[in-house]
Length: 128
Image (cartoon, rainbow, N blue to C red):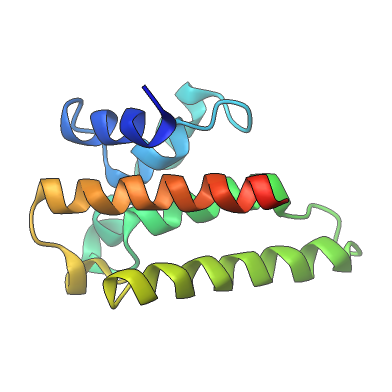
């Protein structure tokens, strides 16, 4: 099973939030237990229909992969800002919005957002 299918299963079959399903399938960046815990409040647009949990989950993974922890690391600060903006633009161009309240229809439809987010994160990471 590939990573996007694993995320889809976590979301559809195991009933984890969209954010959890995305973050949990990148164990090389974050332990699955911690991934499920840290992302648990972001599903359903942070329970308020705001930014889609698949998007926030993807941004968490991208932050781990490309983010910065040193305030003087302007290179990675610039890079992570660009990657986040580009990912959100990509998601919006595909689904016309990244706001949960605009795109939510039903669980299978949201599963498509989860799969797309995982596939896009993989592509971004592979491009380096």
